[in-house]
Image 1 (spheres, rainbow, N blue to C red):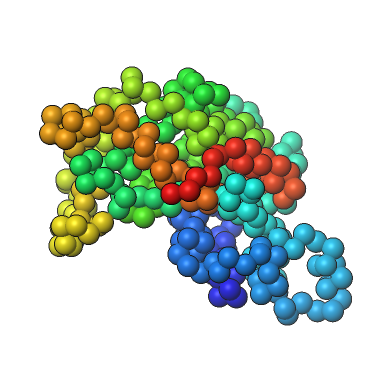
Image 2: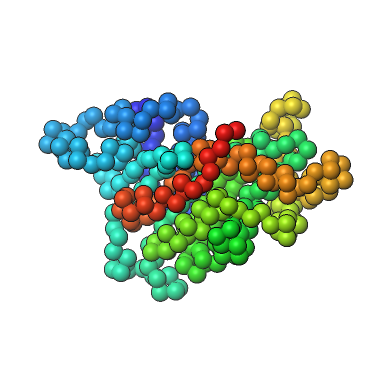
Length: 315
């Protein structure tokens, strides 16, 4: 467990997390959480805490939330960290930069808002390795379909438009074991972005009207990957596994696998397959959330409580 906390400190050593870097950090943290290093002990386990503190600071540390001592920090690290598990089993890492005064920020975006950014990433412990044999690329397809509106925000463009209006951006990526969704936004608008972000995991609409369009988007990504040697090597590598191995799959998917073969060969309703995949794997207990902002940790914790509405399912 001590090794895990040291690895946290190493991964969190950068001065500012950019969108892609933030996603990579969170995927590594989720691998620690999901990959067997977490023995299931209580979050306040003393093995995580820094035993080298002087006696003069021990009384100060005792007054702090024990969850704030799980991540080992260097003496020069000014940011604060809190690790917690929500009531539905979703694990969270909160990072506070410690400066909430946006009004005095020297940088501004084109909308005249604070240039300080906040960011979040949610990693789901599922990827292309879980694709049904008859529907290669289903996990990747769901990644595309998930943000096409939710019950609370039915407009397909609401999430992206909100981020764009407030100097933000978003992206997602699917690999064989994990799927990662992440965004950044002007710091004062973090809560609004989190609410829209969270709603997609609570009750995505998975609209029939978006199926063909998003399948074309997946197909376009596949076409672009054909020109990349790294992608060609990866697919060759995966093809060397036994035919029934989870990694011997066409992970990206295209129009043929998602629309044509499902309909004409396997007689599968692709929308029903998407909903079943989401129902099976998109459980709060399979998720890890990381949020970084200038807000204090207590405020960030209140913001992420909305993620407790994500269902926790038994696979």
